[in-house]
Image (cartoon, rainbow, N blue to C red):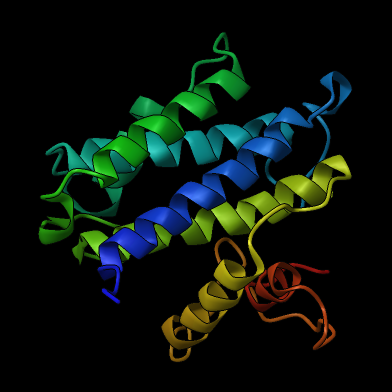
Length: 200
């Protein structure tokens, strides 16, 4: 039996995470858009716009944008952020399709792209988007009273990857805070959220 290339596996995982996140978006009730989220600086609409702008930013990077340093990345993200008059759910869905199409380009994996932690290859960028989709999906589920619908195996693998990635890095409450206690038998998505500083 032939094994799937690493990029194909990551791409399939990202697609499944997008599906899970989309289910949560579709479950947002009209009165919840301005409700609080586990990210204290964002309400539900702002949280979703953050994920959408991240999708758009990485699609632009894969398409050839080369911003200078963190300042350039932040400027790019602000430039592609959804406008107040855009439908937030529609903008998210379109951004996910756009990014999935970019990731599916056969040449994507061989490239290197600017990220907040330096130049990284295509496989790493896909994993970054999987991680952000899972973590902010958990945030969105908590904010809207829903149950995250992400594959357990993908959340478990992402948690293992994050344990390696953050092993020697200082924690920052603006990004990944200090690990919070979570029962060992909790779903992987809850343990991932606790590992990056969310109170579960």
